[in-house]
Length: 124
Image (cartoon, rainbow, N blue to C red):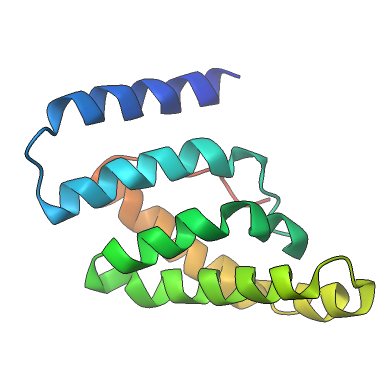
């Protein structure tokens, strides 16, 4: 709960400061909003990625060059998870691909902390 409150406070404070923001600042604000929603996503469960698909697509579009491809990995995986739906066989296949997604997410998390001062939820 403390983590969610801290993220909400960060989003609120950041949004208040960025009335005429640059593209990178807008990305950081969107990233902070995403972080608040991603708290309930278990990176080990492909089906959970569907919860963040729309936000991930938006972030992929506005992401800086150094993490744009990483967002592409996350979006592609989330789209596959959405297509798999509740098909256990397809979800099991996808679970074998989580390594690449987790690597991409770690890159995104590092960039978020360094450039945006946003802490994304940790990978389990």
